Length: 370
Image (tube, rainbow, N blue to C red; front, top):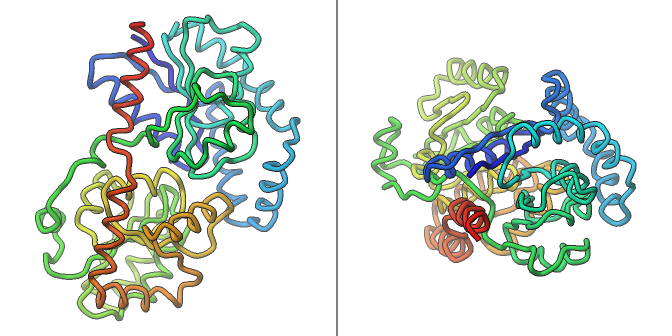
């Protein structure tokens, strides 16, 4: 069996989903290939990512109202432009690879594949999937209704998908696919020993997404005076942020801050942590949910992150933070109220969907065998 996975780099979450699916397929001896939606040009891939990151970082006040308006009344010229721009390249890759199934990790990818499928350019025997990557629907999801299946992280999205033209039998409520390592349980003290952390200190993980859009540096300045805590900052690809934290540690002689760049063992860090300060992206939150670590959702999130933030705060699995000044008080409250932390963990355990990636891969395999 061959599976073509189409991703889009706008942040790293969609690529993480793609890699998780590919690894699971290869684990069971199947073949998979990942391509970028704009893969006909590396320059275009970088451009699309830069546009997205700069928009949410510098002009969120413009992005948010456009996003909301598009959800209510889609303007088709944007998604039509994406289809026009990418369809020939995607079709060429499909014809070259001859996959048995196609999985889209971004709804723009699904729009292109949906167009090709609707126009009869993809063989009927090829099963197509699109993945809802947030705990809300972004604009243009109606363009994905021509694919065979839509994978969702939460049943609450079913009615919204039906409003967009999806049928009940298309919807797979199996959870957002994540790497299998995020489902593995690691003893907290063991994880801390392996990382080189104090086994007995309350441990705070600072996660700002793969591109470190939120500042870990600013948060450390607020948290550094807390007693008997240790902080792990994950700076991702943001070398400037990593350097700023390094200088802060040296200048103030901080001994309770571990400063990390791009990290390949984030699953172990979540096992070692008591809480994580995080953004509200669907992939990051799902990984944290799968590792059963309570989360504090940060300030100044962009629109879909903010929707996720309000949702999980309401469910009692996370705490919504309005501004940086609140951070020390939130931590102190959780340290002094271990029962509250345990209650958050219990709710996370009840909510999470186990083995989502394995379930998706089994579905793909079973459709091929049918």
